[in-house]
Length: 125
Image 1: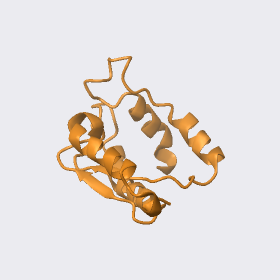
Image 2 (image 1 turned 135 degrees about the vertical axis):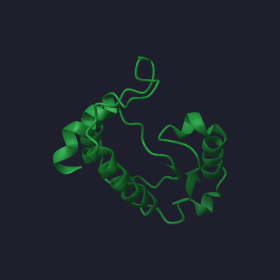
Image 3 (image 1 turned 90 degrees about the vertical axis):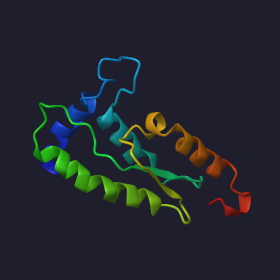
C-alpha cells in the first residue's frame, strides 16, 4: 500500500460496516500483526486453504476514493501469494461475500476447515 499505509490502517480500524460500533467484533492491530508475521519466520508445514471474497471491501464514506481501488488491486496478489506458499493449496471463492466470509458464507468456511482436517496425512505438507 506504500504511502497509503496509514490511511489503510485507519480504514481497517473503521471499515464502514455495521460491525464498527460492536466492540466485541474483530478489532485489527494491523501494525502488530505485520510485526508478528515479520518476526515469525517461515510458515510451518501445516495444511492451508485460502478463502477469497468476490465482493468489494466496505469503504467508509470518509475514505479517499483512490484507496479502495488500490486495495482491490493489491488483494488478489496477496491471496495468490498465500496459495503459492504450499503445494496443492485449495483456493475457494466465496461468491457474494465481502471480507467477512465466515459471516456471509459459513458453510464454505466449515467446508474449507473440513477439507484441511480430513486431508490424508500423506497429502499434508
